[in-house]
Length: 150
Image (cartoon, rainbow, N blue to C red; front, side, top):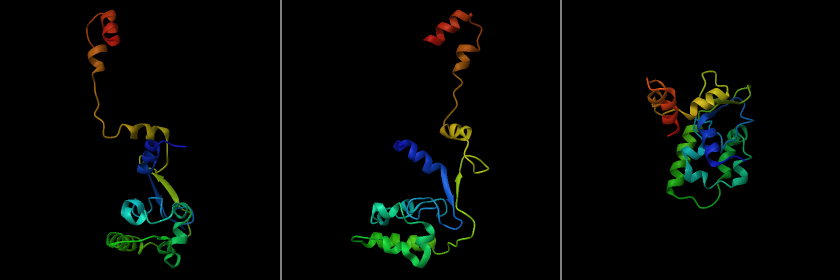
């Protein structure tokens, strides 16, 4: 089980490179230009039963537009607009013989490493050199140590 923060970090850090479409989940994975269906069409995504979201692969969904049959419930004008946006986004998608690949955004190779994940957690933060005031000065060691304790 993952926390909401961990899950959000994972989804923000990965994208699915589509090959044959048998591994990527149509409704859940970020396979449409680095975005998921939930990001492109959130109202339409809400009309998909939860069990179907976890089962439909990209290959299954694209075959004869099976993904459109997953939509249930009452849909309004906003959902229809998002349906058309989604249709346009996936219309040009073609599958290949290669397997799908999950890529890691924080490394140039696209492969996960603990180092890249650690550095990603500091992405956008501002460095602080306040430690130099404590340890890189001419005060006696006991004064520096006391300052560090404070």
